[in-house]
Length: 252
Figure 1 (tube, rainbow, N blue to C red):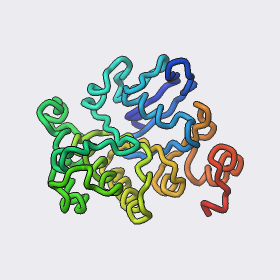
Figure 2 (cartoon, one colour):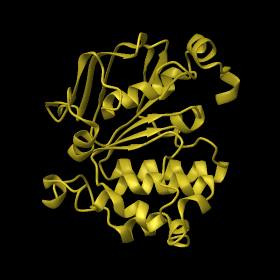
Figure 3 (cartoon, rainbow, N blue to C red):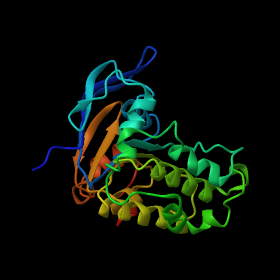
């Protein structure tokens, strides 16, 4: 078996004096979707921020392609090949759709990895993102503030793809979306997996997470209380009830 593309090894992350992640470890393989589930306030977003360098862990290590990310600033981690689709979309509302999408492809944002074309799968271009998200093509010159919540989410995903990453960190991508748009996000993630991209997914929508994930972790009070495949989680009544607040009948 090949080495994981990302290994999180015993990280401990704090917000000031608040002890959030308490010895978290996980692996992510190329072409794999790993879902992180848990109630609000359990540390899911902190895990995403720790990997992205936004809230660096105090101890432990994060290894990407046999290279430690410890001590690297967020921009260097992004340039190395890890993109983030943040909770709340975080698009630039004063910029147009076109301008938002072109930011990761700007001269200052590009790296030797991108210039050499050494990226995973098919290289994403502006035209390819337009083809993936036709609703954005119809709003290409509109500012981000004019977009609906669903269109903003598509823009956030498209912006991440324009960086041509190997790993995509997705934090609550279905939040606030209609059922139709949730299905579109689901389809996008599945297509990305077939292209060889690795996705770490933080998600409150249990049905969405279980439908796309190859592996699932349940996070509670900064620690993993479950690790396994979706079919195994569906049988863990105590985990579903105690740590996710969901009865088995709701996912049947």
